[in-house]
Length: 89
Image 1: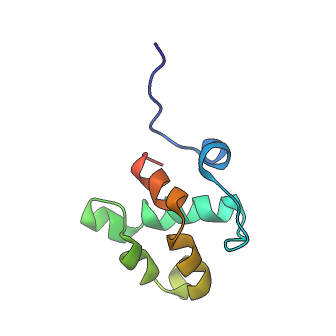
Image 2 (image 1 turned 90 degrees about the horizontal axis):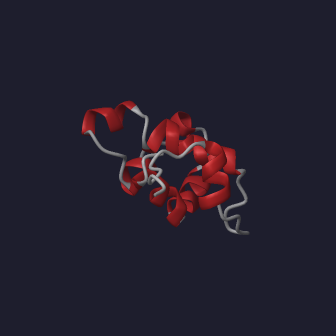
Image 3 (image 1 turned 135 degrees about the vertical axis):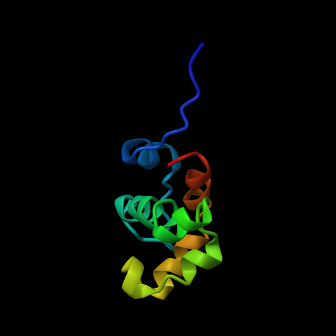
């Protein structure tokens, strides 16, 4: 019986979760880094004890996450962004 894999590294994210679209023309590494660095790994996440909500992520601002507000808005619409966060990325 195969063990269920909960941890997601970049390679697994890229092959199992990333779905490029015209609306989100960002590199999968950029998206994965946002998940690891902010949604799951920011100081705000540690304080809350859970991944950032979409609203909290959008409120980080361009200076902190280094994406434009338009890019952040597009990212929050991605199911894979938050689906991956729930999988233990």
